[in-house]
Length: 261
Image (cartoon, rainbow, N blue to C red; front, top):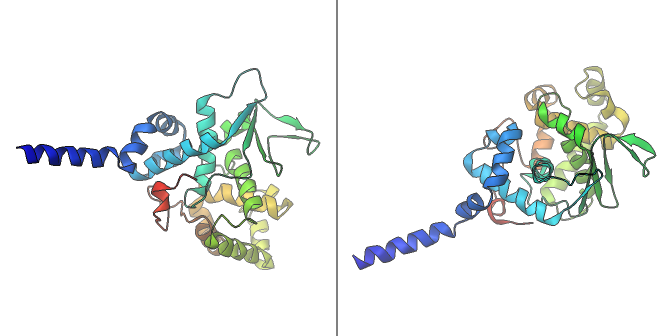
């Protein structure tokens, strides 16, 4: 009898110390928010949900949120902002956006002294990512219109960080492939003539990447059919395929379960 009790205690200890239990027990609040507001999250398998919420919590610990209204940034607002970042980098080892420690939230469209324009969002190389919350929410409500301010601004941040060495060799290899694919005039003309991306994408390469990311996550089947090489390059770059809704990460790595930053 004694030996069975000992074995039971050992097995219980192993379970309580396992990553799955730790992630689940510390992330219920975040998971409830994400299930309510984010279809991408609802589609994930239970294991992928655990990893996603774990990363959201780690992300939040490293960021400073600054409110530009009378009200403070609520916890659900912080979780949904973090979710945009984690959704984009879910397949990558480093997902913290180290160069952007500050996130500024305006209630609606605002005047930026940095660009001298009225903006809905902004990614400042000095370490700030800025959102109009009205437009951020609008982007999250319809996950099929290829308009998602959260993904758009974090895509800008990722593009800026693409010159750094901590995103991984695969990311740089496929990012370069993505750039080379866009140099092809025939492919670029197809993008323009068939309106695969909205017109704003043609502003410059910086905006093209951000708009492509929005389409990649919100209309993956369409992008895969019309621009298969572009889609494949993005899949390889981000290590995820959004058409695999419950299990989008392509290459499973040990760090997906344990890495905190």
